[in-house]
Image (tube, rainbow, N blue to C red):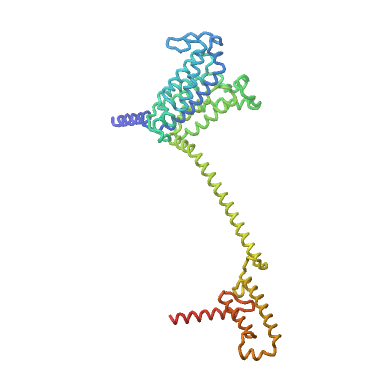
Length: 445
């Protein structure tokens, strides 16, 4: 008895968790966007042939006989303006569902518009049209505008990229619709003679009126390939109806389902059925995966801009670095050339031996040579009175010349310049004299 009670309690808990435990609405938001886009395309595709399909002068001038519970706006008002108005309202409602603007009202209007159009002429509808109508009705029961929608932006624009938690029972109905659709297809196909004999694909590849492209001969004429495709289609649809509920097998069967419908739509014109089934797969994506995908899409433009800025910054830094190196090399080259070349006016080069500016040393050398020549000429004119001039110390004689040289040397030392005839030893003696003078001043202090 306890075991039965435990099983009943566990079953009830799993049932409530499956239908009513709040979860993120990211998966539902992705499904709503994809479904709304396909609804817009479906309605827009009817516009060029609206009067031919639903008008009083079209392929069905009067509405078909109605069953007791069948109804539609075009049953009572089949005039062309009403047909155009119904298509326009349906198109606007589909766009509003895709954008999430007044989502609940837009979903109701979309479901009613699809029902009115399909009930007006049942001979042009197919499985994709019926699936579109059913999904539109189920979307009315869900909080489809809770995330990634205009409604979300109007109510909480600061938390636009957040996904509020809601009960998923409406989303579960959409999932069951997809799963039951596959199981019903397998049940119906398995009862047909062509599917049991593995000949359904072989016949489908020979109906050229519904082909988009010419089927290759090796594929259409191979009994083995067409038989394998027929049997594989049944097995895959059964897996999509059953194994899609298992978290481990779900990604694999959904990927195979996408390949199946893409291949069918590539080869055969089946309308919007395959695309709607692929959109229905979004309802099976876990909320965590859907949230990560949305955040990746949201941050991708920022990452691209950041990458561009990084690469641009690196290129600018590289260019500035190369420019700085080139300028440094240019300065070093100019300095080397100026050190090797002769002294130019306005430029001063330091002597490598005495630390004296070379330009000033050259000028002192020239002044000293001129002064020595003048003194020699004066001594040659007055050779007789040399002794008298020397004994008296007359400043007009040779002592005058020597004194002028001494004063010139002192002036040169006071200005920090040396004559050109001075050697390294004279510079060192000058430094020693300054040091001794500094020592005397320190002692006096």
